[in-house]
Image 1 (cartoon, rainbow, N blue to C red):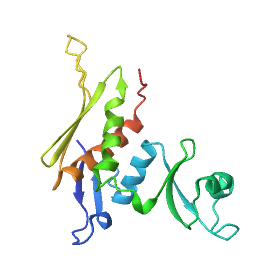
Image 2 (image 1 turned 180 degrees about the horizontal axis):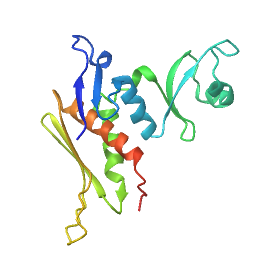
Image 3 (image 1 turned 90 degrees about the vertical axis):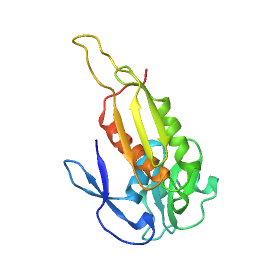
Length: 180
């Protein structure tokens, strides 16, 4: 089981804290980086929109100028966008770590995934913990395997769910699971 622990003991906004993902890489990951991983899982791309024709105009912006104009993005800022679905949000409004309105669609997407090895994935949220597990367990002799299982306990229910979802996505992205 992966475990997130505060790497810096700082009083202040949770979104500014950095957490150490205790894994073989020991890399330092911010909540903002975790939110970006979740946004990609949900079909979004994080982009920066600079001044048109200016030094900070991005390649993505140049390639998607018509779309930007069509959906009405006017301000220089960071966004998450899904061009195919015509959806965009200002990055500051992305609240996977603090809003159930943002986090529950991610939970629902996880629960819709099916794998022939792991079965479906159940997300169980209770008190200050969240457990995500595969629903299939093959106990036939010589065929024993255990489906995905990870439980996160944190100071709040939403943070436990946020971290469990993030850890699941990191694991899921490394798999060769095909949706059946």
